[in-house]
Length: 175
Image 1 (cartoon, helix red, strand yellow):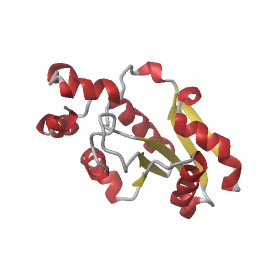
Image 2: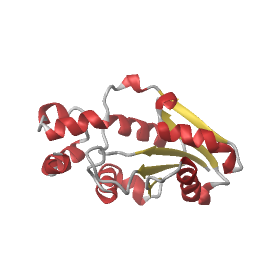
Image 3: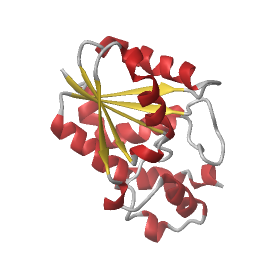
Image 4: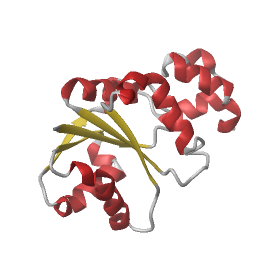
């Protein structure tokens, strides 16, 4: 099976995340979304794991029901190697499949660099695909700022309609 792995905080999900998920869905058998920093609630991580998972489920309910998308969680750890070992454990059921980590801006992304540093510990070849972030210039930080400022006029251009409704209703989580 061809499996693409997307590891982000998705705090919250926005159109760039969706563009990558949609491309992943059209190019492989399964997409595994790993939500990280699930043990933190702070200004960079205002949504807990269940809230993030629910937002993704709102948008991709059919694919999740068919097991085309699987959502997993990972906490932050004291060391990079501990974090990597947890990723490996999450992916253990798929270690006989072709694993491709799908990312944007590989050079500057902490998580993907940790995986690259320890990739030999997978005991199989893993692949990496980078999608330049320049195609859609938005970040979750910008989304969080729009929500905290209640800039809903601009927010609606950068998040799915279903996510928009949830984020507006729960704007107090971003203050």
